[in-house]
Image (cartoon, rainbow, N blue to C red; front, side):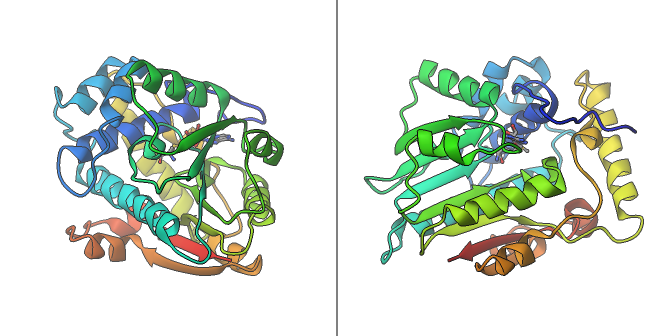
Length: 302
Ligand code: SAM
């Protein structure tokens, strides 16, 4: 398997790394028909991407079957709720109040349209231009109205993105809540470090950050993860949807996000996927170690 990634590669929500945003929205749409999370924009956004199979899965016309299995559905619930709670806790905190949120790799995330943000909150969304423009246009056409002041920085997060965020009106003097959800594995290791450095440099005291922290792979683990991703790709291919999942990620060693942020002065706490499943009342996944690769959902405060 060879990686299809290269510096400066770009995508829309139907292709390459962009399609992972659409698949995440498919899982949220399916999860939203159950309990714990409710993202009413997930299915309409997926429909607008225009891939028939994904539209049918998101709308419920086609059963999730083995394409969006129990692990993917409950995983989407846990992830969505973790970041929803993170932002609402930050936005409702006093002293200092966090009135600025930055959703990095916002994909088809609709938090700027569905969370009950306190008045005066500004929510910045950062993603590649074609993904960001697609969501802005589609939600406007659907008549969706943001529940905060929403601003967009359409930029590649491997590049210097701080200026684009400032140009969108970001104020580094105000405490900020940052999320990088489902992003880090799609960045080369050094770009991940630069991203966390940049977040830190732009964070006034009282700022918070949330992301996933993955321990470095044990011997043989990357190979097993690739095999598992290849099986997932093959399953989708059988249904006519072509996406080489393994080729989109960067494997190998990298700095682990939690200790790296701690080294930058953040006070970091984290929970394993297993803990979060239990905390949210979901049955444990039989193969959670394999599925989640020891990922911890972490938050930091400065
Ligand atoms: N956070 C969203 C969610 O959880 O639904 C999207 C997650 S999706 C798995 C990965 C997202 O990261 C995509 O929206 C993709 O466009 C974005 N992304 C990955 N690498 C990026 C980069 N170098 N610059 C900007 N966005 C990037």
